[in-house]
Image (cartoon, rainbow, N blue to C red):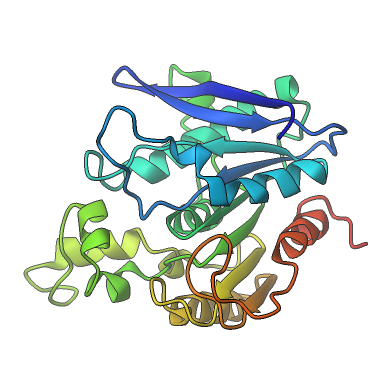
Amino acid sequence: MHNVERNAVYGMYSGLALLMDVYHPEKSNGHGIVYINGSGWHSPMAYAAAPLKDTPLGIPYAEALQAAGYTVFAINHRQAPRFRYPAAIEDAQRAVRFVRHNSGRFDISATRIGAAGGSSGGHLVSLLGTLPGDGDPDDQDPVNRESARVQCVVARAAPVDLVRMGERSPMISSFMGMIVRGEAGGPYGVEQQTYRDASPLNLVSNTTVPFLLIAGTQDTIVPPEQTELMHAALKAAGVPVELLWIEGAGHGPGFPGAVNPPDYLGAMVRWFNKHLRGNAA
């Protein structure tokens, strides 16, 4: 890796610094990508735990984008078990606002920012692409006045329907701070609604940004059904979307078990070139 600005502070939460690494390209194409590694929304509680942004298997994604001329912002965010939903998406949105507010410093467009991530990071970037992300014009912090909306997303193995997955996932209930049970309108209606609000699948509309979905066909952590549901919802809404299956692959940035996998890093770069930069070539 070359020319990586380490541990830039993009926000503070009750004295806790929110950090990002900035991958500066040798020759910038004028666009930025917020990148979020997967972690199951959790991190170890030890003081010496490795930062999320330093996840080794995720680094090739940031480096591929950097090599293509993108300025990449690989972030840490607050994680369970200490922090619960919506802390992680609030931090992801803060990162986008920070990048947008400092676009001049980073020599990138403030109006065209992308997001990429895998697994729980894929969930968060999918929320960035589906939530309105409006800034607060009255906030005393000028960063928080900025929009957190991104203009293009690449999501790998993203959980998108937490209600469906949460019924059998202790990790999701830990992240959410509650278990999902019952039906909407019943005694556990608040829990049901909170899970739906945290599910990108429920937020898809005709204003949703272009999505590239990448997933392994043998993923037993985030079932392929999750990607199929998101693909169908995006198509039904008329949103530009492509689905790249990695045959035989399980869960993880390197797609373990894949047989003759396609160039998924190249597909990611091409998606941003086309739908973020507007370069069909």
